[in-house]
Length: 230
Image (cartoon, rainbow, N blue to C red; front, side, top):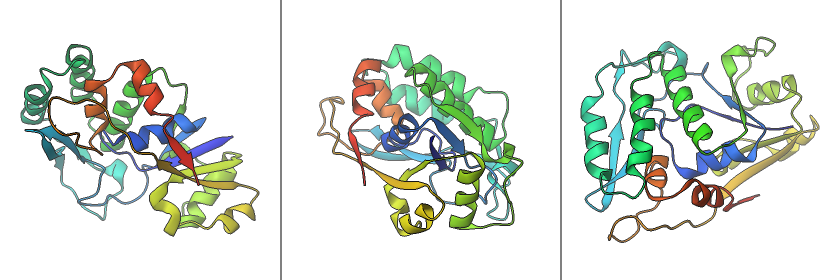
């Protein structure tokens, strides 16, 4: 079984969804410490033809708390209004904005569940059949382990045969160490992707929101295949 383990990112870039699509089980890594100024509650959208960093407001943020111990602020109208104004003339706006409104209005404000719900909703829209699980729900794992050892422990607990990680993990994980546990370790490298936005020069590596606004489900599913495993 192929699995991926990633911290929950809110409306992440296309590579994150390529990872979801590449595996049978996607573990939302919610019982590790929150990282400030990371990608858990931030990403980039298109604004005025340029990349614009947005931030999902959180309550009582601390790097001493686990991701699933932090909550999302109930006030999100300004960010949602920015998204609506920015993408109103995008070809799939009328289809996507109700999904995004549902995402923002999700009742469970726990950060892990809130972001997890957004990932699941978008995956359902794209008709992906990946199973989602929260790492905090894996009771058999050893919570005293850290870093690579903890990932390996989750993989073995879930009877994983191949672990696929984002390309940035190449410096963190050893293929030999995984092979010792009879697990193939691969890294997903997103290939160059370009699609028509408005009339601007294409701005790459934006939030999945941008991809959704400018592409059909069929087009996105083709984009999801534009990667290589290394």
